[in-house]
Amino acid sequence: MDKIIEVSNLQKNYSSLCAVNNINFYVERGKLFSFLGSNGAGKSTTIDILCTLMNFDGGEVTIDGLNLCHDRQSIRSIIGVVFQDNVLDPLLTVRENLLIRAEFYQSDRSLIQKSVYEAAQITELNEFIDQPYCKLSGGQRRRADIGRALINTPKILFLDEPTTGLDPQTRKSIWNSIKLLQKKTGMTVFLTTHYMEEAAESDYVIVLDHGEIAAKGTPVELKSKYATDCLRLSVSNEYALRQILLDFKLNFTISAGEFIINLPDTMKALPVLEKCKSCISSFQVLQGTMDDAFIGIMGRDLRK
Picture 1: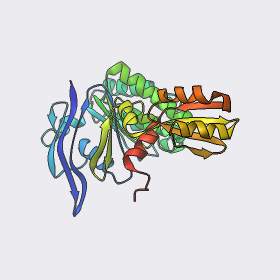
Picture 2 (picture 1 turned 180 degrees about the vertical axis):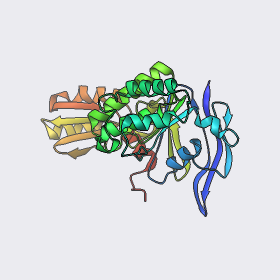
Picture 3 (picture 1 turned 120 degrees about the vertical axis):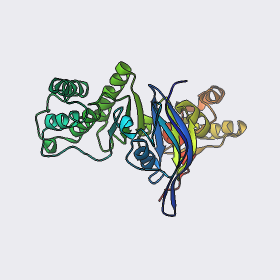
């Protein structure tokens, strides 16, 4: 197993508040890794530490064989970061912003131009590359932010809630670009997101809660453990259906005229459907989602 990030007993305190409490995890090279959690769970603190933006109070972090305490500058040269907030100069054009960023990594003018050209091609910036950043739409700004993060052709791309506030079509377009780049270069992607459908595409997921790891696994493993599948039935004979469900000892709820039955897995729907097909008009068998798994892990109470 090729681990590009290894975190051991990571600790970060803010006075009396423990933001990150002795967490341990690793990220495999070339994978899409997701970090989930409610507000205040410790996600952004951990990201800031890994990106060399914040010191930590205990533990050890290794990134591509480099020690975070001793090799910060070397680590910065192999990572790219898309922050939650926009960081490009609003008065400069996209091209000017990218050129300034490229100069951090290159001194040769031709190599600088080449870096900007390649980043613009990958993220489809050419249509608006000479427009001021402040004049761009939200989706265009996000593309420019990702282009900036790719200037140095990073081994690891950190995405801190990169598509928040964007419409579904723009989110899909941005993710298509990221996945194409990952496939082409073998880049590792470290994601934090509030969109569970994005996390569902990950190779591995860790859920943080109050600075500690609450759950971890592949999306399939988390859904299997923490989410339930669901059978929804539209009724033609309610009395007969109730009797059948009682015979199967199945609990159910009724919503908008549909009977809703939670199941341990979708295959358990088959004998129920066979028995009750004469008293229903339609049905849906729905697998548990990452949203269901997240609620199952974190609980339904709103986190402060």
